Length: 165
Image 1 (cartoon, rainbow, N blue to C red):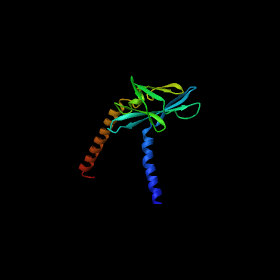
Image 2: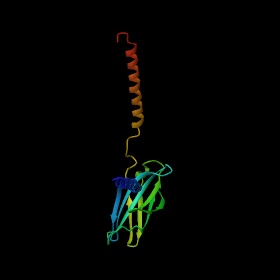
Image 3: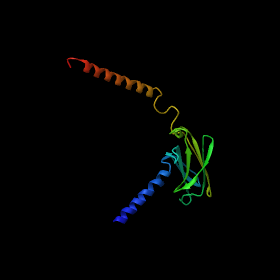
Image 4: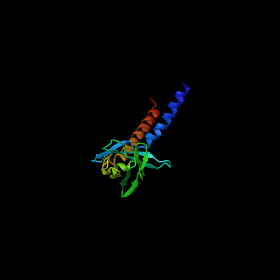
């Protein structure tokens, strides 16, 4: 029984590393006569603490249904091209970010060249520039919070100073 628990702990300790290494959300897919290509992306933290987007391409040869992990995958984002590396069941690229989440406002292109042919996928921004809360919301919330605190303090002083109370 002890060996089974040790084996389970070892497997569980290894699995999250592999799972965390791949991008999480499916951001696009395409197919042609040679390949079916799915692309996932998710935000991660690099070893040095910087934020990055992890983009993983999953190329499948349509003729055989098997992954083509020897294919060359490049990802172009913001005018820079990054070359993927084989990792688990996909081809992975980690792109450092200036700000958390800013990759969602950028388009990027995934290009694959393999033994069966080529395929390309253009991924549109997941968020548009205007998406998210309006700019006035944060200062208005701060002012409202300070007003409530001031009102509460004033009310407590009145109760404390009230001789009938």
